[in-house]
Image 1 (cartoon, rainbow, N blue to C red):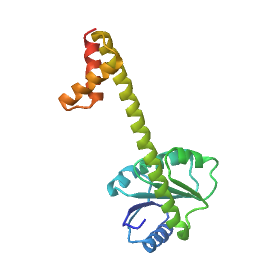
Image 2: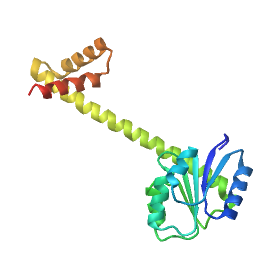
Image 3: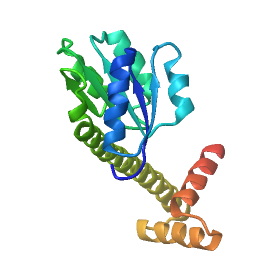
Length: 194
């Protein structure tokens, strides 16, 4: 957390908001914005385009938790939520909703920096895993399309699998496209000819 961050703090109590802002200023030169009333929260948060969202709430209900997590965009940025009590099983719901850190016993200014650092680190780790999963799924889908295109070429031209792949690869190189793109075009064209 060495660089300047834009931080949105969701806190309805003015005195607590001031204490949070002071603690954040002590931990670094951050651009801190406090959002009080929860009404129109998504719009307010989006206006600041924050790097991190900190939510301080006494006793969240499942509905408030869902609204807060949707509004704060936990898939777009790290979100740390501070609650006063155990809140009856809401920790799991918060984590499932994408909250990077869920801290019971409220927001203590001295714990703010380590919790925020942890939320940022966890968010980055989860984002990297999501990216890798998406890439793996895309590669698997491409592999399926390539296999289907090879099957079409093998049947239509009476060639073996290696020759079918070589033909796909040569066509892709000649056209300056990826093998998966050529395979997709072949599969699509084949579907039109039926």
